[in-house]
Every structure is written in C-alpha cells, then in structure tokens.
Length: 347
Image (cartoon, rainbow, N blue to C red; front, side, top):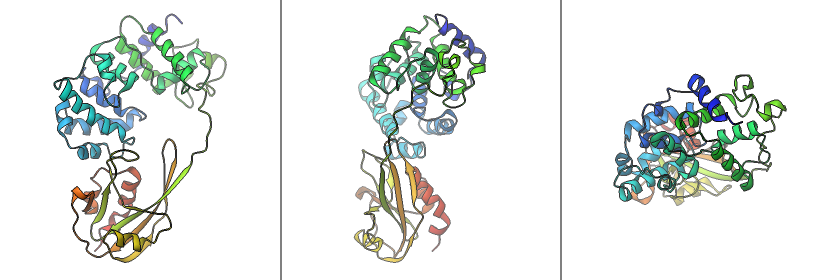
C-alpha cells in the first residue's frame, strides 16, 4: 500500500480529531503530559485529569517544584501511578540537566523516566515536527489488521517487525497529521471490538478482506491471573488513619489503609497500631484487577478511641474522611472511603 500515508492524512484531515485540549498548541510540556496520561487510558477519561493537572502545574518548573504527594493526588483515580512518579522525576531531570527547557533531541526525550520510544516519537512529531514512527497499542492493532501481521504483538520478533513496518510507512511531509491519523484510526474506526470497517479508508485491509477482524492482532496467550488477598483496617476515631506506602511497587508513594494478615484478629492489629478497638465490623470484600494479578481486599471497619497523634513524617496520618478523599489514594481505597463517608463521619 504505497499510498497508505497519503490516504491516512486525507482521512484524518476530514474525519479525525482536531479539538482535543492538547492539540491547541505545540508546547512540548503539554503534549508530554497528554501522551503519558494516554498510555493505557482512553481520551474521554484523560481530558478532565489533563485540564486539572495543567491548571495546577502549568509548566515543567511547576511540576518539578511540586511535592510528589500533590502530583499523586492530581493523578489519583487515573491508575498506573508509576506514570505520575516518572513525570515528577522527569520534570526534575529537565530542570537539573536541561536548564528547565524541554529537550528537543529525540534520544534525550526517550531517555526521560517513563517516556520510551513511542511516546518520545509522538512528542517529537507533535512538538517539533520530527520524522519519527509511533507504535502504541492502537497503532499495533491498525498495522496488524491492515497488513495481516500474524503473532502476538508483545512478542519481541513481532514487535520488531511492526517497528520496521511503522518506519517504512512514514511520509516525508505532514507528519503531525499522519501520526494523529494513526491514533484516530485506531481509536475511532479500527477499534478492538466491532471495528467500523465501512468507514475505514484502508480498503485493502487484509483483516477486513479475509474476515479476520476478530483474529488480528493475535491475542495474548491466555493465562490465569493469580489472586492476592490482603486485609485492611479502616480505623475510625472521628478521623481515618492513612498509611503511606513504600515509594516503589504497587501503589508506590500513595496513601492507603494499614494492612494486616488475612485471618488476623483486627482488634489485635489495631492495638499494634496504638488503637484500642471499641467495635469491629467486617465489610464486603473488594476486588481490583491489575495487569498481572487480581487483588482481593477484606476491609475491617474498626471504631477506636481517640488515638495518639502521629506525624506525617512517620508515614501515618489521621485525617477527616473528606480530607482523606482529597489525598493521593488507590482507586479501591477511595471507593471504600467514599462509600463509608456518611458512616465514618458519625461521632
């Protein structure tokens, strides 16, 4: 398909998206924030987070100067929190190593924490007009279907083949329209389920012409997700006790609820935290899916007497429920606190 790029550019100009908030200028900072947020997250979900994030942290200097806790709070609910930690670390690197100016060099962009090859390419194209290929999930799906690429795209050999194809298709001009066209085609037309093939400009698509839209891309090999079980303590003394998690790993750096062993006595677990239980209620279990496992949480609502004050520096903090809901919380913990807000607010 020698005219793949030109057909895609023409389609994008007529049918693609042109009014997304990050399309209004070529500011690399804004493009960077949007591209990182869009990793594994849909546009409609990202837009309100993007606007709130930029209203509070409008440039690299503001992001670098902000406490990580604030960055995580702005990100709370968006998921994949390593992205927020990487943004913060990258902003500080830009300030310290690039004088606060977003790097223009593709290799320097790709070297920033949490960026990588495809995201760096998108930033370089949209902000600086460079000729670089992208290969995010939507693009992989488009290329696999249009060109009949077999094999799970996560396999190194298939990934390498897709990169070679993506680079071979690059036009000499109109790179922003072409790149946006790939994103739009995957998001709007060549969707994972029920693709709208009647509206696609790629009439020579192998998947469509052989009826294999549901077979390409080749699905990831099936595997059973293991379950991890944990118990959490919702210690209520007019306020709620939050505990900061370790800076790395699942929910790294977020505020969460104290944990105890599954099957442990919540009264004793509360006592170990300096809280004498007055009443204990077992709450319905919560299930939360991650990429590699499924988390099953057993919450215990433990009404306790007025506790000894603790310092944030100690990694624990008592907060009213309303204030706790404004902290950087994992999604299931936020959901739990929100569901119990009227209860937790009672004396």
